[in-house]
Length: 109
Length: 117
Image (cartoon, rainbow over all chains, first blue to last red; front, side):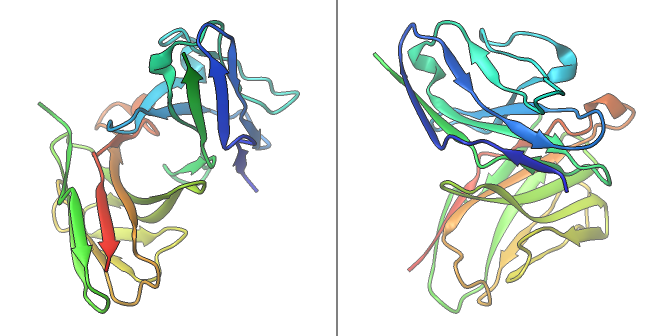
């Protein structure tokens, strides 16, 4: 069965430190994975998708098929990165997404 | 200014009452979704609709109902049968016509917070 796991409910790092939000998935084919972000008092929005291979707000995410992971990374965290982050995987059968439980990222000054 | 509008933003309900949450989009998206967001549980799908006059149950449809009479609108009714309705509800849409690569990129509304008194 398709599944997305975000093992950390809460991640707290100091400003300027590297940050890595973990996402592991179970899927037999070639997945299309997403990271969505929800800043305080803002709408949930797409942060990045792996097929774009782009860096958004300094964040990157590399698909590792061997480890079935799609971890979100940023070398130097900023206070404005504090938010709730969700990893998501589309289901095979329709347009639905399977969501991880989310990781709350807190950047300490 | 295209987007998704959810109303009301806050809603209080007495036990035993049905309430309806509104979701309207002007993005010309085919598919619309209702999610429930609870702390530590991520987003759980309540109902979704891929086309007008058709909708399917998601993972936690019990105690909820929807309709899709117009492409732009996908209201959610939280019925008295829903045992734990206090939550934050999110509406979303996706799949712009003619842009298959846009599938799975969801646009979300600002949410509605329902509290049962």
